[in-house]
Each structure stands twice: as structure tokens, then as C-alpha cells.
Picture 1 (cartoon, rainbow, N blue to C red):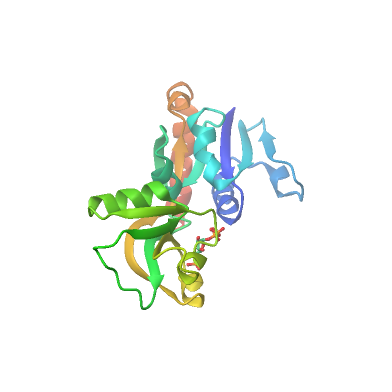
Picture 2 (cartoon, rainbow, N blue to C red):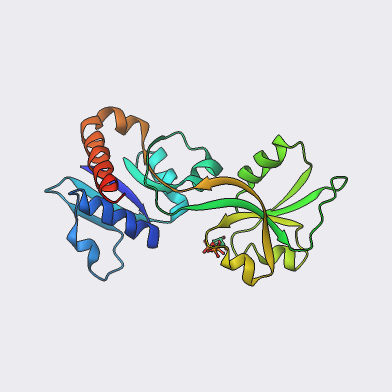
Length: 209
Ligand code: PRP
């Protein structure tokens, strides 16, 4: 049995559709319910719906053998796992954004609001820029508007949230997409099954190009 952690939400559903096409279906998953675990013993898979940022925790600790995680989460938490495939979905970017009229003064400590303190710290460390991190858990765009921060480091997908809040992207940090990740021990001991899943998923992805 291969245990698979899927991120709850739209990305997880898209990712599941790929697994389904690859032959790892679990029809009960389509039924309206609040269940979090679905299993198809015949094809040897068990799916869990987990909070997107928790996928890497399940995989790192071996509660899941494989999972689907955003590159943002992988970069932020640096889990000790293998990254097997880029699914090419859930594409967005991590960027610095600020009010349109924001003018950076390098002689001042920059106040950075973000859900991704490690990514933000790494980015500014490389520029030897002194910053203060303000860790928030959501609605990051509010911070510069209310002068809680000078800039934000956040996910930009369409740019609509920034635009509608009169902010604009200032610098791109890194491109993000969903990755298939594996627990290191599982990769060794369930290698045949995991490699087979990878190959079938790659075929499905290639057929969509
Ligand atoms: C993310 C991100 C932005 C928004 C970007 O928020 O933090 O707010 O999506 O998308 P856009 O460029 O297409 O407008 P999420 O929906 O994860 O909610 P959050 O505010 O709880 O972080």
C-alpha cells in the first residue's frame, strides 16, 4: 500500500485527477463527505487530504510515502525528503510587493510581512539587506496598506489580489509549482511502486503537453 498525502483544495483535486488518469483511482473520493482518508486496496493506494502546508510533514515523518507539495512550502521548510517530479500545475511565483509609490531606503531596516519568513530572510540575506520579519498567517496584502510593513513577500498567481489592493510586484524571487515528493525511507523500501507511480504520472503529464 502506498500512502499519498494530497493538499486539500483545488490543487489537490487537480493532482488527484492525474493519479486517477495514471490508474490509481479511488472512486469513493468523489463522494460528498468529510472523510479524510480514502483507500483502494485493489490498486494499492491510500489517499489523505491534508492542509497544504502540512504535506511535507506527513511525508518527512513517513506517515505518507509520497505527496503533492508546493515548491513554496518545500523552500520554506526545507524538509528532508526527495523531490521526484514537477507536476507543472499550481504555477505561481514568490515575489516582493509594495505600495505603488513605495520608495526603498537602504539606510533603514526594511519591514517585511510574510507567511514565508525563511524564504524572505534568505532572499534579503543574499543582498546583505537588513530586515525585520513580521510573520503573518494570511491576508498579507493588508500589511503595507495599514503600514504594518514596508513590503510583503508572498505568492502571486494572477496578480489580482495585489492590483485590487493597490499594491504592485516589485521583484520576483522564485517560480513555484506543485511537486511530487517522497519520504526517503519509503523511496528505498517501496521503490518499485513509487517509481511505477512516477513513470505513469510522467506519461499522463506528457500526454497533456
Ligand atoms: C494567496 C496569496 C495571495 C493570493 C494571490 O492567498 O497569499 O493573497 O493567493 O493570488 P492572485 O495573484 O491570483 O490574486 P491565499 O488564497 O492562499 O490566501 P491567504 O490570504 O490566506 O494567504
